[in-house]
Length: 403
Image (cartoon, rainbow, N blue to C red; front, side, top):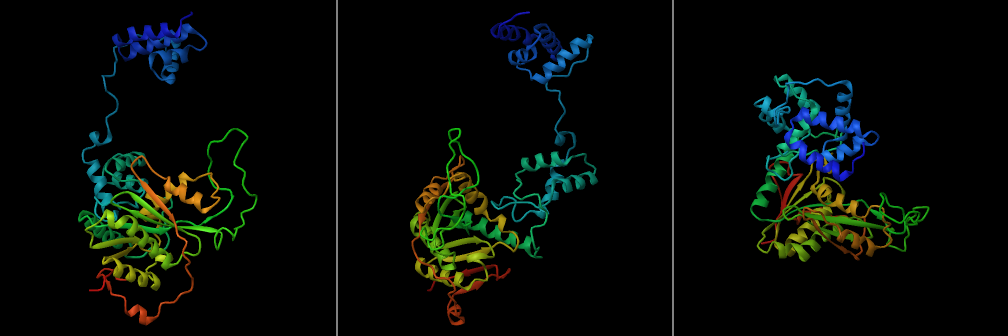
């Protein structure tokens, strides 16, 4: 049997609208069998059916399909679990809520429970549900999986959940008031030079980018031969600002990066701001135990007149820092497979980072020198107008500008 693609298209376009589900399969199976070699693919293309359906239909025809009264009603597939089991969605939300860090409308919302554990608990309450169904329902009610599959996040502090609730509450309030809220952190240091970079990008076949065999830092390209990107992510406006240094990741460097964001972007974006809220990891150059971090923040508060509030993520949860998911991950994607040959290349690649959801990133090169090992004395610490919050004053504190 010979038939052109156009003839098959015309045949199925004419016949299929007048057939029920069973009749469509019989016609498709008979046509595929009659066409012989390549018939299943041709019928699938012309009829719009999946190739697996056509294969099954041909098998039924060859086996001698009998006329039947049985016909699945239009749209008569299996009903969604939440329709078959009233109250399932509400029960899932109630289970997840106690483990949610902060207000359910918070931009920092996340959950720790696994889908398997949730499925077991729902089953114990009388529902019939799988882990996969739980995953789909979680997406439906606004949750997303932001953690790796590991269940242990490191040392678990007893007040970890409470800190997330407190942090989210403060952040939500400041965002609602139109005040600036930023997430800060130092991205992984990157070797400057013609070195191999993880990932791949398109090239002519057999013409990959040639890089050095060994990754030895070149001191001629920065004091340590490394770029140090310190990022500021404006949570409310989905904007990133990255200050790239090449000396050392110190508290002075971190605060100067925030100063650069404020003078370049922040004060124009928030002309009426009276506060600046910073969410940061508990360690590194902006750690809650770092004296120099608070000392230089006090200088920034005096310069800007802003009341600076710092909220630290609890120990063992640095991966939940908003900047990791909203800024640094996209920078890494943007420069995958490209050797970071010099600071200019790094700045350009960071500045070219964007997303379809509207992320905009600016990057600058910080040429200042930041000495390491600088000690802040007790007397200097005593001059800082620091007010610890009632909840975990070590993690949450406000630095006031001078009167």
